[in-house]
Image (cartoon, rainbow, N blue to C red):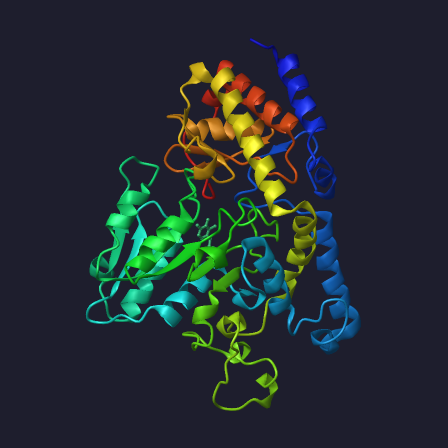
Length: 426
Ligand SMILES: *Cc1c(COP(=O)(O)O)cnc(C)c1O
């Protein structure tokens, strides 16, 4: 078995061959800390800091004229950035708008495209999905006067952590109107087969919306090619747009032109918005699904972040991400085998996203001890530790250091010093 020095030397050799290694210096990393929580909040990059300050400067120097002048005129910034995000996910520019939050964008999709009839009125989701999506669906059904217990159906999991595509297809019954699924499950990191499930839905006359929170910026997408109906996501995880950064919404072009269910003056056709007519003439691109004035300061960091993604390119990011997670899993197998961890994410590359998920009966205390040892993981109840090495700023050496520190936490039983109680945010 290689000793620690040999492991670290091996990791540095991988870094020396890494084509994306130079992007690391564009981020604010913390001295001697290995940050593996970019799937919850991505780190600040220098280009994002610069674009945020540029927008502040614009406000300072141009005031009201900033809507139309300066480096990033705010009036159509949401459309312009939507077109750039479209590139990342294989969509056409008019199909994407940067707006709202993940949960609000799901509400917008439901209010615009869920039209229950006597025959089709069920919304299908799954029992492992992010709870906010279920709360949104339930509350939306309640607004329609429909009992969520009856009209929201959840595809179930055979194991605790993974879904079988066959089971989801099986749940696509004749009464299902709309399906809402995550591309990557937030706990286990499983990547669902988006093209297959989209085809299966369409074969049965069902619309399908995808929550891309855990895949955007980690996994390439071809939404147009796959014919996906709708998608929504946040930019503050793998896209590093900052806490609460403005989110995104995709509406396939065959659905463009329909009225937004939740409307406001920013749903307007841009050229007539300032006519201020009492009745809305909504845009015919995805911009129609905006509501009010864009949150310009919360969108500004995304500008710089997109510069980095365009330069790095999604295929290269995915390739390195898979190398990082493969390497992480191989070290977990070789170094931590005797400590009772279970890797719960699928092992096959096409079935996983950007993070590795471990379970352990002492997960809470181990996560705390790891943080004290300057490795930042993320804990998800009841017993899951998520580790996300991020292609643009995590090195192979970081991964090796993280595993060696975790090994030392286990060997020394350092974790026993911590309370077996989770923090409010974890
Ligand atoms: C992070 C995340 C969300 C968060 O939604 P917000 O509206 O930004 O709070 C929703 N869904 C999934 C799958 C997520 O991972």
